Image (cartoon, rainbow, N blue to C red; front, side, top):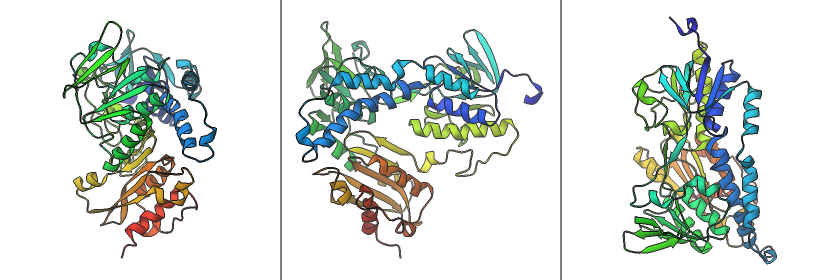
Length: 472
């Protein structure tokens, strides 16, 4: 019996109503597919309530104050300190008081059914929630990711903060230890330092070590200037919290640090341990291997989108995958052609070549595509050029002593950019131009005709091209 001859509750069931799941549901629904979405917590997910939005709200006030202090005249107007309670209140406003009424209203308007509860797959096209089994022609897993707690003796018993506890706190600890030198740890070090915490940051490697080497150098120097105690090349050996609540972190070199709270920011893993993967022969807790339409390998009905597939653990990249997956699911269910060629309508090609990423530190870090070392590991014949952003006229207008750097990685055989990195105040808005250049495979020769307005930070594009020279 074909799918068309069977009776189903829905064409598509999406497990997880975060930003990624919402987009899968929305794009499929717009193509005429009947959709239900399952959520055990808040509709809107991690990004809306505990990650992207609240963390950036915590960061923004500190960024604004630092930017003013970098300008003669403006710095003289800064006479007080940040009002931490006002910042926390603004953060809470961004989360809608941790209520999802507006998001639920949007689902209703879009015609997407919401099923509250924990969804578990119990067979092909079968999802059980709160004692009831729902059937669908396709199922999409969009359950996001959860923090990975490192196996440090005593850590689990010390009631550590994860990123959720940090972004939803209603008070600022006088002393905070952060374990981890990645994106979340770096951003939250800036946020809590600006709000009055004495922050100690412990990292086994250089900060943000997946980016170009100069990135960590600039960010570590800025954190030190902020008063953060940045410890590089250290590993916690033991964590303990005493009866008074003080946390002690002992390092492998014998040193000890004390704080009122300890935040663990050592990475995340796909949240797939309890969605019933074992019932269909897949490994619980592992990322789900997918093709570029997000179809899980070995199936013709199951999709995994966003962090659940482990391809690019970034909200915007997950939403990009969701748009492609929603369209692909609808096309398959309706018997339409699926455009799965590179850069086609139904694929997430950018996951492989043009993933944009921003660290909202101060200086900001904005990068897309490959680093120089990554490009070489991929077998490309490349050349890289760099330029000091402090030499750009437009950058000098943003700060009296602007510190930053820009880098392009160029494929020498095709004369196109395959990677770009910018570090400096207000550089995040430079990133989309680089993303377009990479996705569009715009030649270096053609980029010479893309004239940056003067005086803007974007003039760095001209300086990088001059450093590279015209192809001959």
